[in-house]
Amino acid sequence: QVQLVESGGGLVQPGGSLRLSCAASGSIFAIYDMAWYRQAPGKERELVATITNDGRTYYVDSVKGRFTISRDNQKNTVYLQMNSLKSEDTSVYYCNSEIYSRATWRRDDYWGQGTQVTVSS
Image (cartoon, rainbow, N blue to C red; front, side, top):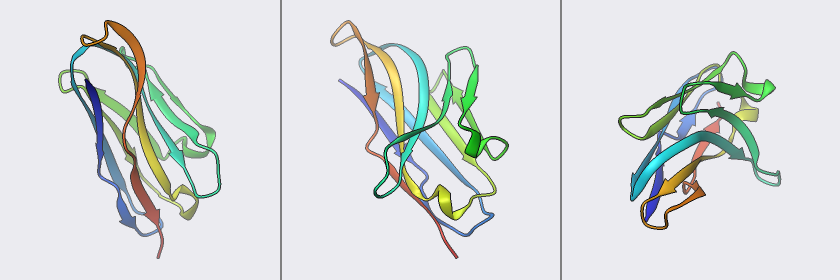
């Protein structure tokens, strides 16, 4: 099986920073795009940032210039550095990745369990 495990969430004051990590483990043959999504209470889940396996990135307009997505392919890990945090960034953040599994010999979408980020004074 394949698992995505996030870490790094927490409570931070407006203007502060947090770094989220998401490590993929299990029966992995290959990892393709990796991404971060977020979902605030009462709202739909939205895409925050993506990174391809050769390092090309995409950001939603609301986080451009403040968030940076990166990945370490040796560690099967994706990161989200979040700076200049605002109250509207408060959400549960989810890691997502397209992974070719050795267990199923299929390319599927996998999700982490989510990590809470709260921006408040």
